[in-house]
Every structure is written in structure tokens, then in C-alpha cells.
Image (cartoon, rainbow, N blue to C red):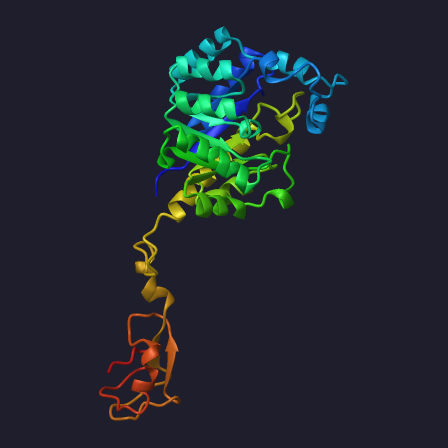
Length: 336
């Protein structure tokens, strides 16, 4: 199988501080991810002055102010910030990626050379946004939190109608709650998306822990996206549902192990590594006691013991009633 693309979602967990952004890049690199992803937006273009924070945002920011606009203004990255982050990623040797949340930001990401666009769950019903993304980028990753299958199908059709082949589209199953309760993950819906829409699938995770992304890879996810942070106790909307660096590293390691575990040919046959253990673990027909030549072999004088390089016990019925062609000491392998 091909390697799963692992996206470490730094998002807005830099808290508006470039030093935090650089540290996040360092930790993502140490973890071995394929991309580190940030968020690109103009706060005024993303939310109105009247937009309220979600419950989880109010809880996680630890602020009384319930304005989304005020919250996002503090988390917005300028073009200069983007340039410094991209330059740092380039020096460190990790791929930079970002999600745009408004039309101007889509254009900006195209201008700086991104060919792959990530559509966030909240924009899946934004037709002008979807059309512009389809006309700017060659490949699409689409998150589907809060969506019905029909809404996902409608968004997919926008991209197909605008000329993007299904082969260049990956749809991520997702739940937009931070953190997502395990009972609401519904991971089997990822397979439904694959079967119903005929696209590559993946999973964008907001649960606590690393179990669900690992399970998603075992079920066929080709892309995994996971929020991470320097410290889950930092104030901010997404920290609480994010992995800390050591957890991110453990998730990447586990996913790479799962890739190996499911990469076989599908045939049930002894593997190369276990061939040497067949004779050690299996059994053969042996003498239960001393046997003299010409004696009839019966359940009284033969039995089954290790090692397994003699006659297989599956030949028991063939051996019973035969005549000993030689004398045997106790535990000798019986020969036909």
C-alpha cells in the first residue's frame, strides 16, 4: 500500500506568536509527519461582528468575551508571518500546508505556490468558495464535519463539474466537536463515503488520544489530519483537543507500523519470519515407549510431541495399525 499522508494540524495553536509557530514546526518534524498545516484567514472576511463563539471555544479560550471576531483577530497570521513560517519550514525540510477560510486567502495560497487545497468542514456549503478553490488548485482534500452524505456529494460534484478528476480528490470523514466524544466518531461512515462516492478517503480527527486515527488507517484512510499543540493547557480554541508532541510522535509511529501490518499479499500462508518456528512449535508422531521392530503401532505405543519435523499428527490414522519397520526408543520420531 502507499504511504498514508499525515498532516499535523498546527492550525491556530501558535496563539498568534511566531516563536510558538516555529516550535510547532520543530515538533512536527521530530514526530515524522508529512505536512504541518496552519490556517490562513482574514478575520473580517471570515466572521461578522455579530458571530458568537462556539461553546467549546468559550470554554477553551477561558475568556468572557464571546466574539468570534475578537478571538480570530488575535490568531490571524499576516503575509509576513506566512513568509517567515514557510521559510522556516523550507530550512527545516518539512512541507508547509495551510487551509484558507475566505476567498482572498484562497488566492493568496495559490500565489505562494500551493497546488493542494484543504477545504475545511465549515466551507463545504459555501458554493462561491468551492468554485474558486476548484479553479485555483489541482488537488483537493475535503473535510466533512457536520455534513450529511448528500451535502458531501453536492460539494464533490462542484469540483467534478469544474474539471477536477475524482482521482485528485480525497474526502476526510470528520466530526466538528472539540474534543469529539468517542460515541460520535462513527468511523464506519468513512467507508460509506468511499463506497458511495468512489473517492479516496481519509480522516480528520478531533478525539482525545491517538486510537481513532490509527483505526482509520487500518480501515483504508489515505490521509490523516490531527491537531497538535505544544501544551494542551495553553489558552485557545483548539488546544484541548490536540495532541502534545510526544503523543503526535507516538501516533505517527503507530500508523507506520499499521501500514506495514496491512501491507501483505492477503494470502494466508507462513511468513518468512515464522518459517523457522514451524518445526519448533508443531508436533510429530513419536514413540510413547520403547517399540521393537515388527510391533503393531497403536495408541498404546505412540503419541504426539514436539518437535514437528517428523510425521504430522494429521497422518495419525495412516500410522495406527501399521507395522514398525525398525525399533524405537521412547520419544523417537516414528517413520513410515
